[in-house]
Image 1 (cartoon, one colour):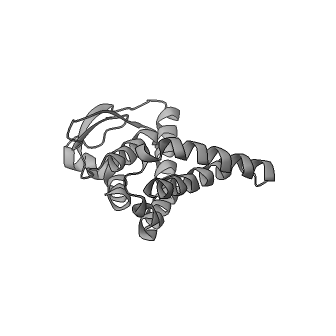
Image 2 (cartoon, one colour):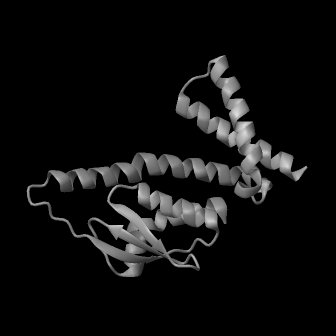
Image 3 (cartoon, helix red, strand yellow):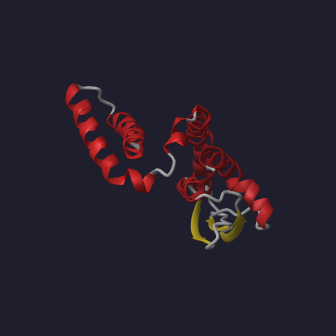
Length: 168
């Protein structure tokens, strides 16, 4: 019975992403989306979902949606603006560095969400992670802070905070 709930919860998420990305609600797309999402969910539910009840927690879902909007509308725009400004600058004043950044997230999903948010943001990329998931090494194209705690606040505090609320 738990497998069924895991499959249904994951399938709903996969189907939603599919419809958003295709941008179509034609019968063919809906049918294809349902079939593909059920097959993918059946094959991966035990790997992807540990506790299906967490996915039904509306606070977690709302926090994830809030994070997605903030990330796409604020963090990404600011990072793109910085990289564009650096690229168009006649002096190209880069300050690259690999910075050691401690994180508070502990679950694999939260660490992954934090790492992906950092890597997908222009100007930063996670290059390594300690085995205990407590420290990220981030290549930063314009390192304004190199002290670990200051770099944490600048680069990933927001991402880490949301990731803990959603997955821990």
